[in-house]
Amino acid sequence: MEKQESNRQFSRRSFLTGAVLGAAGVASGALAGCDTSGGASRGSAGVTIETDGIEFEVFDTEVLILGTGNSALAASWQALKEGRSVTMVDKGIYRRSGASGWSWSCYSQLPFPTELGDLKTWLIDMPLWKNTLEFWNKTWDPDKYDCGIYQINNGQTAPMRTEEGQIAPYPAPGWLGHQYFRREMDQMKTMSRATVYDNTMVTNLLIQDGKCLGVIGVHIPTGKFRVFRAKATINCSGSSQWIYGWVKTKPVSLGGIENTGDLLAIQLRNGLSTAENEFSKYDFPSCILRVSYGLSLGADYIHAGNFVDNQGKPLFDDPKSIDTASKLAQAVAWAVADGRGSENGGAWLTYDEDQFGTIERKETLKFMTEQLGQNPLLEPVEVLPEIFEKFGGPLVNGSMMTEVEGLFDCRGAGGPSIRPTPSIGSLLKIYGGYVGHTGSQYAEQNPGYPEKIDTQPILEEISRLTEIRTRKTKDGIRPHIIRENLQKRYYQHMSLIRVKEDLEDFLAEIERIRAEDMPKMAIADHSTNWNKEWKEAIENYNLLDVAEAAVRATLMREESRYQYIRPDFPKVDEDNWQCYIVVKYVDGTFELSKQEIPSL
Image (cartoon, rainbow, N blue to C red):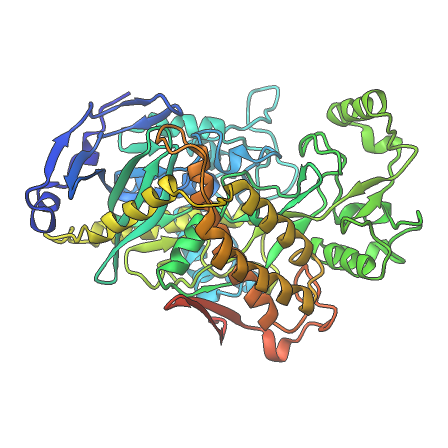
């Protein structure tokens, strides 16, 4: 692997003077190599700073990208193509986190750019979508540049070939399906201007004078504190599905366990305005027996005719009218509310031989009949609404920059919860490339770092994290106890059916957890090496903030919209609620307000 000297091009002298004058700065390690903790590529090893008896490592880059999944990879490729040095930071293990770590082997899809006139009812943030389309239309011409070639040139793999070895026609126009990420991630490791630090949890933003200078975090294997400075910081860290709870021994989230909404919570605590916190996307991809997405016996709106109620009767009078995932989720919700669903808030599926045509499903059928004594061909199988995406993000402008200069967010408010949109996979890939472009432009125009950087916020954050790790309390509560309670209640009250009284009770419980349980939260192991319970404890603060923002926004929005229902407000109210509900954290409390949706 080439040495990544370009990551060191910004002088650290300015950082070591001024606010940290006199601190010991010692370069550690080689400029490049491999991070054996997760196999990610590494560039400069950074500089170790000690001040007030506290040590932390400092790393510099031009463009800092948080996450290594779908949108993060797209952003990284674009930034590299524009000549920037890139550092990617991921809480999980590289190649096993982000979209590639999802249980359903996430694929990438990239639709052809299209005319703006075709999309006027699609996205709620129209200026952003317009700018994104203009960027992609300038980037490549679909009439001249094949989608598959684009994917391959960006590190992906085309599994479908003709006998002559050419790229085969795609099953649907405009996208190339089942593009597994591993090769794309491997390609990223070979780039001389790309550096990846995995197993590194971001815990706070580094903001000075209203400008984001990077992030603060902790390296989980060693417990060392890390500061990443950058000219542009781009959040591509994914959503917060893991707030959605468990049923018996089964998780009901399609997201990986790293998706705990860390950056959403961090942005909230730093006073950023966020929106769409109340919305999530649900589907029925797997049954109560959770094997994996590819092996389980799931369903979507295409299989609406296979849904039955607790009496074995068809759940829908007109299955053909259930032609979108949103209609399916709401229809199941109303059936459950009418007492026709399962006690877990789901329904049942019936099967026939044709639905076991693939090798994977044949193996599932064999396993269920031989090992579990359950034959799906003879008896219905329970399916539950699983969270597919948890929306919520900061307000962003047409360049995907947040209210804080220098901080970009690929999941900024502007998702599909109010108007129909393209698929999530398409948006993440296109938005990722676009934010990689706008972040690179900003980095190029950024004159540099200030001579003095206040280290007090860094020291305060390190002290906060250390207190969580070393806390000793009487009658302490382990982190997993608090998390399990929060997740189960979120599933009970923030799934497809959201009842006002239940939401108010849940909000009261969140406030009780914050006041009583969190101060008592204590971990059994106070060491720094691979302390996963410490990580879980830090995440609990983030999950709690994400949950409270979602519940408060749901209570304020008095209607049934997108995929969930409010039985007390059963209809969509376009006159009053075709808007953002903006949530801000001000002086320790959440403040909510309405805001008009941007339009052309």
